[in-house]
Image (cartoon, rainbow, N blue to C red; front, side):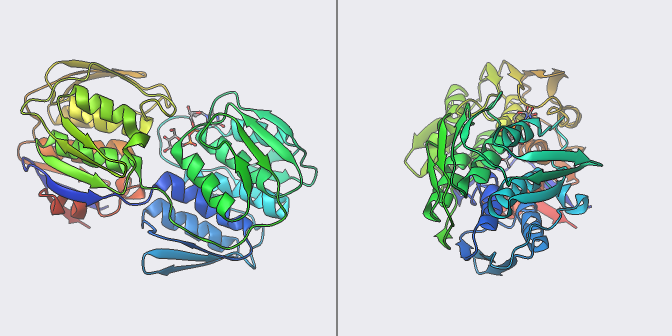
Length: 417
Ligand code: UD1
């Protein structure tokens, strides 16, 4: 198992461009299933999740070639093959193949998805929405069998604005003759990005990025070249890295409007921020202040995917902070690891209370999931002495060469394989 050995105490200073968003790239990769022509996706980040999604496309007989910064995909000979548990369990986003295969082939067989262990991750909203669109679904032995030959138009109301369910339903509705309206859809920027990509290919999706999405089915999609949006979670992680080290940092290739809720908290912590349309600059204060209260919500609220990182920042901020995790029930698994580093945190169920300490001290810690793992790296950047972050395969699911990026900004991180 690979690990990072971090020597803490170095202030970060410099500029860094973020990769394309994992959470945009994954549904967009699934979206290529619906196209019989070549699609070129630029700036392909080599996150493990992205590579695994490409493996799934290959299982569906699609041609996937990495060329320079791009991934070139040809779905001319794609088949609605079974997506077995061995690959489906590699990532939660394997479930996106369902909507895309149903759109193109009107049938799909997919094993239940895997993903980070952050609590129950049901797909009931995906399945209910599909049923409401006329898809016949049977489930047996962890496999979902779907038949969309009687897909019909109408309204689909989500009980909760699930990101994945919104994207799956949107994809399922793209090909055909029906008009489908999704109500109470999620509003995340990655959903609008998926719609922009599909619309460029010829789809007719209106309102993505709002809670009402209208889709007019079309006969076919055409090959395009597309660059997904920058990763707002990585951008946020880098900004917090700048703040927690007392440094200054510019983050580019991101739209700060997409993480306004984090920017607000960083302001409250005393950081100086300069925001442009596609980049942001942060200068850390001499003493970080507690941000008081953070509550995770669906977009545009504070993202659950930045909860662990802001909590790491609070461990060395003056004062007390309460963090409420509303989306996933097991998203504080990194807290005992931070406590090993001297953090003063009490976490119970979905609430964590953080009392800032003057500094953390290096320790041997274990990443338990992607974002919690990233928060341990942030803590290690601040800590006195050495921090060893084990099990970094979790981190590599959503960050490319995090050690190299942070070292280029002045950190000292050694990766041991
Ligand atoms: C997406 C993101 C993930 C992020 C999450 C919340 C991708 C690839 N992943 O995950 O990084 O943490 O949004 O912003 O985009 N739920 C149900 N039933 C369902 C689906 C969801 O109860 O069928 C619940 C979940 O348990 C959770 C909440 O809805 O409590 C939000 O989940 P959802 O928005 O679906 O997250 P994902 O799409 O899995």
